[in-house]
Length: 148
Image 1 (tube, rainbow, N blue to C red):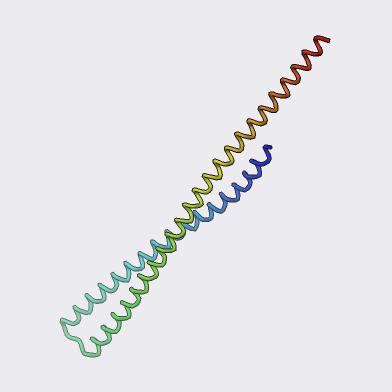
Image 2 (cartoon, rainbow, N blue to C red):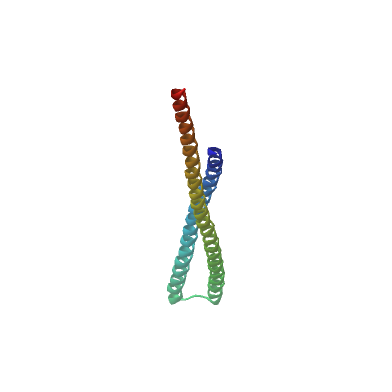
């Protein structure tokens, strides 16, 4: 009967390997999210610095073409920033879904471990009971042998 809990132990090892892969994925996604946040911060900083530099040049004087060029560039930069926001939101959503799956895996593994533990206890109980029965039978045989 011990074989059943051992077979489940093998299944548990496979499950733990999958859990480890999910944990690695979570770590990688968290790092990726931080990098995306840094990119967004850098874009805002660049936008702010570019705008500041242009305003300083504007004090000296700029042509209409330069003003148009600056506005066009700022519009493009705003588009890139919006795209980065979307990428970051998508990253956050994916990260959250992976976190939920990981938490479900942890819960299932814990339940599976409890099941295996219960099975081991039950198997040990049956082994102890069979051993006790065998000991009782041996004792009875020894007592009969003494009386004969």
